[in-house]
Length: 321
Image 1 (cartoon, one colour):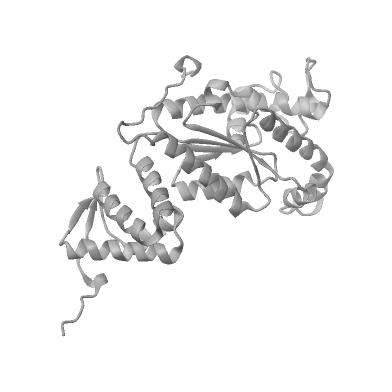
Image 2: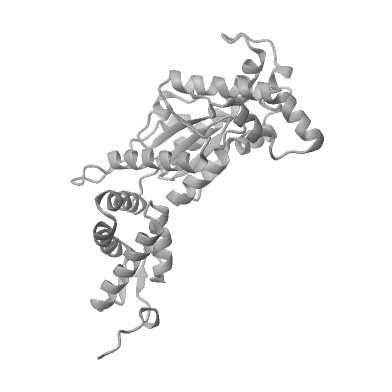
């Protein structure tokens, strides 16, 4: 009786990309499938079956798109139609030049950082940054005399308010709006460039106030605006102050009520404008829920297989070089 060959000892199948090549790896494929929603045992099963088929057919070199077809077939057989569909949508999108921009709004302490990182990992989007970075850059460009609110913390901006008119009656919220206006406009420029240049990015932070983002941008099919909510005030407080000690912790406790005002305002703004709002008390569940929304959005973009999806351009006149 002949002994079955050890799959790991066989010469590697080479995968050809656009300008690169690499060796097929069951482990890497299984990890990729797990990130796309397959349970780990099924992911390894699919990867092993794909390797078996490649070996049986004597394939020593294959391009990425052809490999994806093998994976789709085996995923359908092992994991069923729903999970195979998820893989198919993600891989179709990743093999295209169609961008996906996720705007993840949330007050301090709601989990925008960890949830954005989880989404970036599942979707393999390397471009991930915070609106705080945009604010820091703008502070270098705009003098404090011209925009004192920008140079303050969001929940303390009201202490530096210039005389102005606002429909809001709470000074903390007026200050927050004036503080957020500048980074939000900076984000708009970034998103417009990303859409028009086909770059997928995730931007997260407290400055993503819906009223400062144009309807054209926020309702664009390639842009997904989501706001995080922590319904339980106690949970929000615990998360917000958990990383601090001593005097810094005392300061955070003192300012939490103002942070909570900003939280409630941002959530209300999102809900009033019919934007997606997700409870973020369970971060992993929130990542999974948003991932499902992303899949549905990608399915709507790539739903018609008879034609190549196109990008609806955004007005370039609003982008300043």
